[in-house]
Image 1: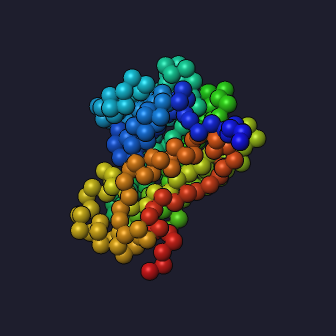
Image 2 (image 1 turned 45 degrees about the vertical axis):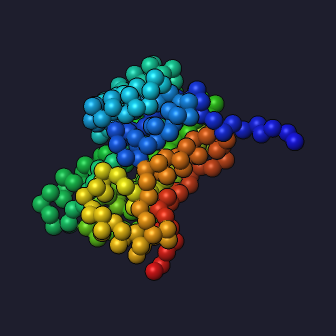
Image 3 (image 1 turned 90 degrees about the horizontal axis):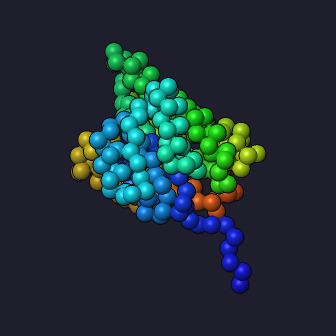
Length: 255
C-alpha cells in the first residue's frame, strides 16, 4: 500500500500564537511545541508569555504585544520572522471579555476595545504575516472565534459582534488567499475552562453544561488546541473558510 504524500507533522514549522500567555493560547503553544514547531508565544503580558515559552522549551520564544496596537503588530511580526526564519502558521487567539449592558456608560469603550482586540487585530496580524506566509509551502491561518459568533448571550453584544465579524473575516480571507494555497479557517469554542470563565462558579458551570451541551461538561483548552493543530497540518490542504464549533454539542442541542 503506498504511503501518504501529505504530511501530518508540523515539525520544523514556525508558528505565531497570540494570546498565548494563558488558556487556549497556552495549550496551543505547548501542543505545537511538543509537535516540533518553533513557536512565537505572543501575549500582552510579557511575564505570562515568558513563562509559557519556558514551559514549551528551546523551540519557543516570548514576545510582548498588545495586538490592538497596529504599529507594534508590524514591528513584532517582522522581528518574529527574523528570529524564527519565517512564518508558516498564524493562530489569532487573543481575546478579551466584553460583557456590557447597552445602557452602561462604559459601553462605547468596551465596544471599541472588543473590536480592536478580537477583529481589527486579526486582519492586521494576517496582513503583517502575509509576506512571510507567502514564502511557506503550507501556510495556515486559524482565527479563534466563538459560539457567540453563531448565537448570542444576553448583555454580550460587543463580544458577539466581534466574534461574528471573525467568522466573516475568515470566509473573506479564505476566498482572497485561496488562489495562493493559503488556508484560513476559524474555530468557535463553546464553554471552555479559561481565564475568561474563571469567574463563573463551579456549580454554575456544571448547571450550564448539563443544561446546554450534549457532552454535559465544560471543555478543556487542550481540546481546542488539538482541533487547531488539525487545521494547520500540511495535510489539511483542502479545508478553508470553515467555522468549526468546538463546543461539546452546544450548537447542536435544542433542549
